[in-house]
Amino acid sequence: MGQVALVDEQIADGRRFVERFAADGNIVQAAFWVKTAEEGDWFLYVVTDIYDSDGPAAAYRSVHRSLGKLNNSWVSSSEIKVIGPKNPIAKDAVAILARFTGRMATWYGGRSLGSMLVEQTYLYPRQVFTFTQANSMTTEDINRKLIELMNRGPGVWQPHHVGLKDGRSFQGSPISLGIGPNQCVEVSFIEDGVAAPRVIRLDEIDSIG
Amino acid sequence: MTTITSRADFEQLMDLRMREAKLLLDHQNWDGSYYIVGYAVEFALKVCIISRLMKRNSCPDKTFVGTFYQHNLSSLCKLAELDMEMAKDPSVNVQWSIVQEWSEQSRYEVGKTEQEATDIYEAIEKGVLPWVKSRW
Image (cartoon, rainbow over all chains, first blue to last red; front, side, top):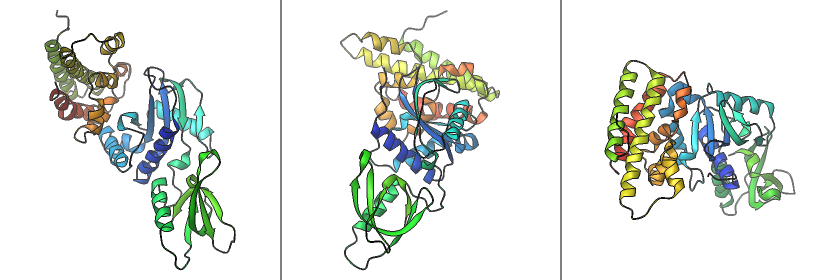
């Protein structure tokens, strides 16, 4: 019997992988965890154009390249399945995403995707793989950049452009990381011209430079 | 007619399925080639499992036997104790990802492309089969 529940680490690292895969230039139309009725295991399905345009070998080479860039991932290559947009499973997933346009992930309660019988499905929101700005970064890139900026010694305060995934932006400098409600990582910024620190959830940051 | 039970039988069957798949591929029968070629991996993994069993001094449990008689390549790979090594080995992990997609349910599917049929055949012929055989 397969693993019963999808754990937080799989959800988080699945997101990291999908972000990385999209940031590496692969067009992603949907990404979701699915527990199949037949095998009872969880698989991360990624719907990407490269599968139909260049074939499975090219698609999986890209998967392994992107996965190789992540350190200590809870997601292994054997859990990732790539499909093209023409696949009936992909068509159903894309249709579900079109119905749930919010920024939150979606638990889908349907019993099938295409002809595949499923027990549970967890779909990542579009913003995970749809970048609106040319300089979008993955969560891992953002983490690295934040730590780099916070490790700079005392000196002249220098604001940086912080882009948010909802399209807003501001000029600020990161001063600390912390854990907020729901165990979300939050970043405190000193904002240009504002006395109180501005606290932003890490997963809401699209770019920093 | 021979009933397949031994390691040698599975080896013979593996070679036969590869030849059939190549024939279908050469005649542009993409669906047929895709469907047939997956069985070659199934039999290669079963040879590996039999080899492992022969070295043991105990009887496998019921689940083990049940899984052996199924066609799921991921489960067979685990049974052969090759899954961890396969996933980590950069010389074969891309090919294994392609092969892992295969299911005997593909007999009910039509519309496999030339690219899909060729990719899985090459992944098996040049990657997964030689890798598994080297661990028999």
